[in-house]
Image 1 (tube, rainbow, N blue to C red):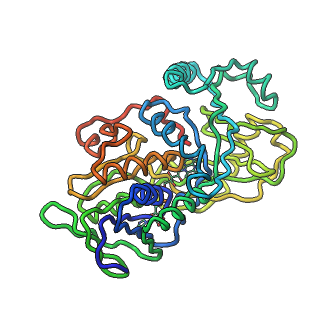
Image 2: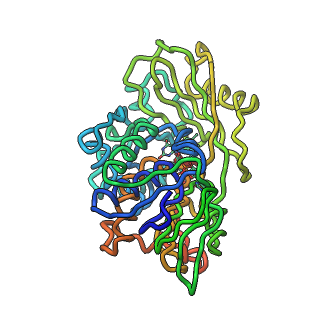
Image 3: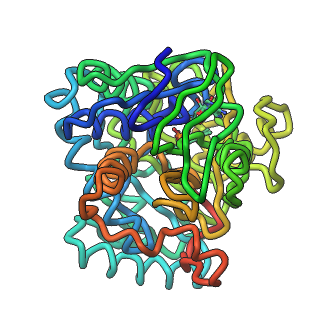
Length: 382
Ligand SMILES: Cc1cc2nc3c(=O)[nH]c(=O)nc-3n(C[C@H](O)[C@H](O)[C@H](O)COP(=O)(O)OP(=O)(O)OC[C@H]3O[C@@H](n4cnc5c(N)ncnc54)[C@H](O)[C@@H]3O)c2cc1C
């Protein structure tokens, strides 16, 4: 491994990969990416690939729309097909309060020219007759949303980053961030030291732990999220949108010939990624309530991964108070879909260019200064 580098990226998930890719595209030299285990073994490998522009804050919508440019052209850009399927996202509102927020969100989204529409319960029933609608206030639907393969996307970014000269080391854990006189000086790893003036924290759910190595407090906590998969389910015809029952915190979508059913997100932070029976029971309750036809479904597997949650469910991006130590953390369940724009903006910042999205609202300082971003629908993230 080299003894010096210009830019050291900690973390080989979709975020580290996208930053590496964008730096390489811009011709940056001396870029090294360090991954403690295998590339994609963290949240990225557990992600279910949802991509949407239906967000309730302008900053998240901007990241979605910028990222969409890459998702729409991913194969041309990287040579890897991520299987982006625009099956649409359908959000369902049960209470009056939820419905009011949906209406406000749709106005915001339409101001960005997102093709989203509000639907009444009869309209929802007409389009998707398998959904129970008698308790609903309405829904919002955008055909532009969908899902793609996170592992494939990460591989595409890595492939092009390598071609652009980025050196990638797996099985290399960063153990210490070296600093001197308020500036970053490099890292100590399980395979030796690398010195360099720029270090990027892209360590997903480990963001807090890695930041502490640099003496910086980053309030990002890991929360387990479980998902389950059924055997082939031919009783509902395609296309099936990704349906989010907002009130119950449950969603489902097509996955291959079967279905993907979301499980619960834990209410307490931990690195536990076991799948448990209680979660499966809750999934079945939610599924049968909203889609009675799912009584014919058979669950055959499930997995769990960590969401990397920040206090206001928005990313933390930018340079920290330690000069040269950059943060790309806290994506709160949507780091995959925003990874193209995050990589682009981080590369611009690191190379001292003006970022293509104004990101001052995502600075770490906001937690100290009490400038948290208000998101009306925080109860459920995907
Ligand atoms: C079940 C589930 C479903 C999800 N669904 C969606 C979805 O539909 N859409 C969406 O946009 N997002 C979704 N997400 C969230 C998404 O997976 C994450 O936001 C995204 O993967 C974060 O990427 P990352 O690169 O920051 O983190 P990771 O993929 O976790 O990568 C960080 C890497 O850093 C490495 N690392 C940590 N510490 C060190 C160290 N000291 N030294 C070296 N390496 C280190 C880790 O091993 C890891 O590989 C989902 C997450 C889960 C768990």
